Image (cartoon, rainbow over the protein chains, first blue to last red):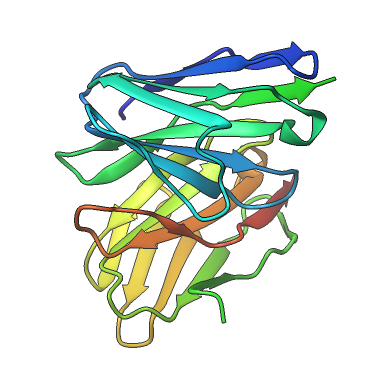
Length: 115
Length: 112
């Protein structure tokens, strides 16, 4: 199957700092990537759709100035959580859309803890 | 009413049992159906993908879609303790936005 990586897998930071999470599709090109967050024992919540070479589309209620998304190439999208606060602590997961099969493949997730 | 309904479980079965996981949906525009498996603290893993009514088999897994009833199922034969995970159904209507709509997930525990 297709492989999507995320880095880092776990990050702990102080309140007020910014954190960047990378999502890479390793063996296919992805014109579209998605960013989700997941709280314990809950399903995935779509935050934004990231399109290569254009601005991301954010879901209702997601602050675009707080969650900066950049999709600079066909294999890399980044999510930057700016001025992180404890309530931003969560599990962040990206997925990449494989055009050939029109399916989404997920990364392993990044656990963010803001102290 | 949610677009996709899925029983959250938990579902506990003995090793070797046949497991049936189900989702119902309300949007008749959904054309593509997926099942993902998610282990604790990991990203979801794509198990099955189908876009037509009927059955699709892959090893111990069978995905079933009934578009007329808006009902999809995942069957796991000869279940193993390693199958213990949360199973998420997901679907979309295809097209440019291609957002996946997820069920809440069913937590499965296979007891040795």
